[in-house]
Image (cartoon, rainbow, N blue to C red; front, top):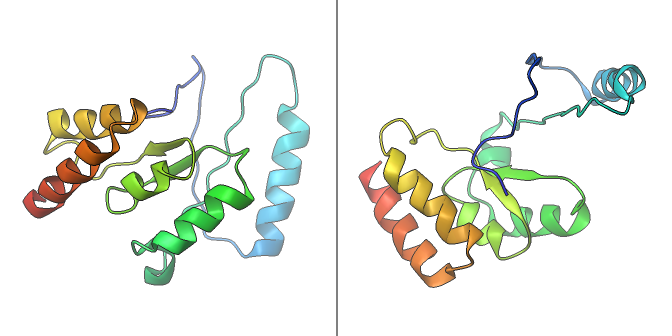
Length: 128
C-alpha cells in the first residue's frame, strides 16, 4: 500500500486521452519495450467522466475483485470502502491542504483500523 508510488531514479510521466483500441496498442508496445529485469513500469488509467470518478462503492468493490493483481489508487470518497476489499492506495487532491490528516487517513487504512478510518474520512471530506 502506498501513499504515492515509489519512483525509480529515472522516470517519466505521460497522459493522453485515447480510445480503447489505441490504449491497448500503446500498453502492448510499452510492455514490449520495458519487459527487462531492472525496469518496473507503471500504466495508469484515469476515468475522466463523472460516471467513472463518482464515489461508486459497488464499482470499487467489483474492480478490486476482478483485477486484484493491480495496485488500485482511489480518491478520498471511495478509499476507505475500497480498503475493505483489498490492498489499495490513496490519491489525494486534498493532501496539500491537509497533509497530516491525509497521512493519518492512509495509515489508518494500512493498519486496518477501519472504524477510525471511516470516522476520519467523514471529518476530512466535510473540511474539504
